[in-house]
Length: 78
Image 1 (cartoon, rainbow, N blue to C red):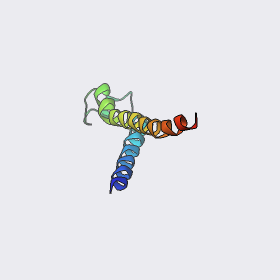
Image 2 (image 1 turned 45 degrees about the vertical axis):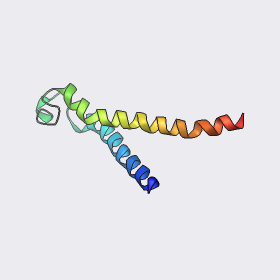
Image 3 (image 1 turned 60 degrees about the vertical axis):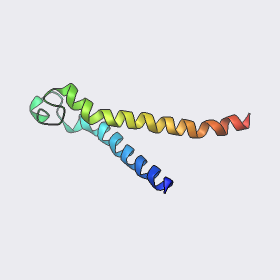
C-alpha cells in the first residue's frame, strides 16, 4: 500500500511540475485580460504564484527524495 501511495504522490507531483512549466506559455504575460479572472488574479504575480508555486515545491521535494534515496548507497561504497 505504501508503494501505491508513493506512486500516486509522484504522479500528482509530476502534474504540478508540468503545469508550472506550461503556465507561462498558456497565458499572455503582456495581456492582463488573459489571466485577470484566474486563481490568484488579477495580478500576474498572484497568478504565477498560485499556478507555478505548487510545481516548484513539488520539484524540490522530488529532488530531495531522490537525493536521500541515493545518499545511503554512496556512503556504503566508501
